[in-house]
Length: 392
Image (cartoon, rainbow, N blue to C red; front, side, top):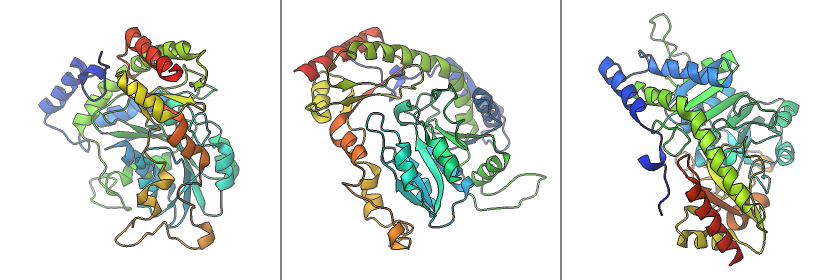
């Protein structure tokens, strides 16, 4: 039995609406968002969906995070606290702005940043907190830490479309800036694309300028007001994203329904823990935390033999152990900004420094691919395979 996958049409909601959207753009002859209408409409629709004032589109989820980091304007050597369990796209924008990523440890059950660990990592050069809603679970408690430290909170919502906090606020609306991805593997896609949201007009303007070479394009004057890159989204991508955005509530409803079914099927299984609140979780993947003597590699191997798309740990190594951060040069032969003085403020990196994150990756975290096209039959087969893998 095969499982729908986001790598092809079996697990995507792409259809006639997206074909019509692309055709509309091609027939218009205008593929650039600078002069087109689709991307601007997407931004309005994204802002309206989240009840905020501003949305800025860009070329990828990593670009969205780069816009946010650039907008909060760290000085060279400033620190941004973030998670060791995420895609490298969470960290690359920090380095690109010559800031230092400081990794706080995570909650051993969710993999999200532990607010107490974040508070302990606050220092005189902390410029922002960049929280990740891992797998679509809300990363709670970070806004309070950010407010106490007087720094902005950036929310990485790449895996957390329509995730809700316990108070029902949407992910991306609690922080200063929310960042979203439209990459192939996300809940909705235009191949690659990103969006940021904020209620701060000044930050929105900075992000828009940074995405377009610092060019405000106001009054027909070619003036570059600040440093910026070309992170513009195309009209083709914007049109597809608009069609996908309309399907987002249905995608989440389907993922949550089947996630509830699997959660119920595993509820009485000793040593297996699943997320507690299916209705607020976005279920980008279905994460399972195992208790000893179960290990994620053994269970993942058993599931693979049963044909279930699952893997151990999500990453091969947490980000604070990645060679790109531990010992590789960043610019030329230099490790700047990872070598910023004073020495007592250099980030501690490598194995043995973030025990909760390391244990999740190497021992306890199992992730099962999830998709809105899963049927009850898919879910029941996964449940049987997990039971067989756990009970032997």
